Image (cartoon, rainbow, N blue to C red):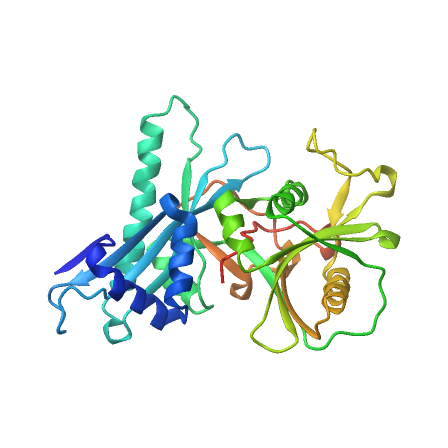
Length: 339
């Protein structure tokens, strides 16, 4: 008989072994993640008393649900809490039995019940939801696996690679900033777009293995932010988020820390941001770079750029996918999938 429940102390070792075997993370890395999100995390496990193994209480499938932040939707009153189903894994000997689907459904039901409970106790009469369930497919093939479970592609991003940096010169002014400074600038640049605002715990966790950067290219009126970590490949960095904007010459004011709103700007094109990625990589002393940016509508809705899927019906419809790149109308953006 299948039983899905919150992680029990007696299952800790089995849970950690399954996660580590599936994704390659060490026990220390897993515990660091769980500790970082503390009371904002739930670990669910699946056992099956009918399973033919030496230990009937072995964890056969697992899922970790955590609060990543809030969904920012321009002109919407509410910013729903974002629950991410993460590290979904099933023992390789038990795949094909529906365990992964069962525990994924369990997590989405948990968020639905959480949302219903909030709405029941709230005096707000709007139809806006207070919490949403999302997941980030570990591979393109899993997009179609999750669709029958009620998840639909919603968040998109674009992955890029610089095999070898060029010698192209650019007057880049680069400085390291704190995670709180990064968050303030990130929310400013992404304010016009549907995106996930990261929680303080998400940012603190990221700061444990990443560095936050701010940069300016004065002659091009470009400024932006980036988060990077060193790759396992020699002389390569991974920029998990790269946001760059061009400031309007008619309103080139610095950010007003008090009012929160700023200068007129727009995100720069893919071609320009490739030059920025090249300059950052060169300035930091590396030779190769992998980087990720928001995806604009002109990319079309391709599974290759699905960064996150959302559960259930949601009353936001992205713009048509046939807009020109120059319009830079961006698709809903998740940000860090903690990969």
